[in-house]
Length: 424
Image 1 (cartoon, one colour):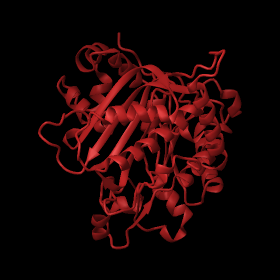
Image 2: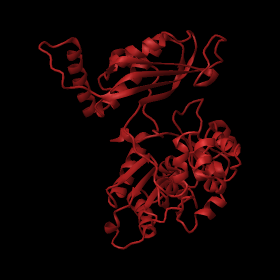
Image 3: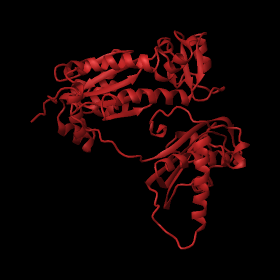
């Protein structure tokens, strides 16, 4: 039998900030308001737009547009270097607003979050969620900034609430429930659905599913056996009908990625950058009491690789290596040693333009082991803990190896698009 759409009232609210990073810059500097503004992670000759204001988007300036090209499109275009402290402040203010309405809240990223009112009707005191949504929009203007706007989506599950938050931008509010869900699916394209991109659209098209309405009306068997070929088909069948399928997992990876301000092939400079990345990854793991067995290192290159270079993830302009080690580690010096082990297998002489270091295979740090005599590792742990305590109080990298100070690449923290867990 076909499963009917979830008959429960829509009680999940998704709030999405409008052009969050560019709008934050416009809020901080009134002279930028009304002008096309872009944000880049590194303002240099290679700068590309990673976020754009609505004024910029209206002119065709979008993700990936280079600074020079944007200025040719709009001579009054302004590119700003991202400022993590501003976005962290905005994120904190938004989170406080959310938590004042329900204990079940989550920031999905810097610029979007969820308030789950399911089972919380007593907190609402009879108020409809649309009223609360409008109140949140007003509070954002009053408590975060008068130039800041958000979109609010309300639906029976998290995924549909995200769909609803995409309508009537900017500064919109929309509700999806059993009365209008088919109409909503009827005027959307497949690739407009969250998490459905071109590859999945092609897979759906192979079985005659060309629109969201086709997707909604497809049987569970078709989705599970022919399209997704896994339990994901069952999840999509439920999700499209307003039932909850999202499960929150713990931290599974901790990583850092950087575009280098000064591209280099110098092994000493690269070793310094690896230590910087290892130190930042280590600090993030330490704050969550985690250690890692696995490490991935990825390097992006300026020019095409030699014919003998492996071509895998990262495309033809990069190299990567990963390894799962026997023992979990959490200190920067340990992660650095493993990064250098991986780096020793890379092509030599290539000019590096970007790097990624990701720790995986995470597990809690073991602190219950007692030793009769202090081991060398235990001494290093005490030194590491002391250095981290000083850096926690006075700022990151206040105490670092001297070689780091000679580096030409600052590798400052930039926009954390995918997560906000490091803000806590």
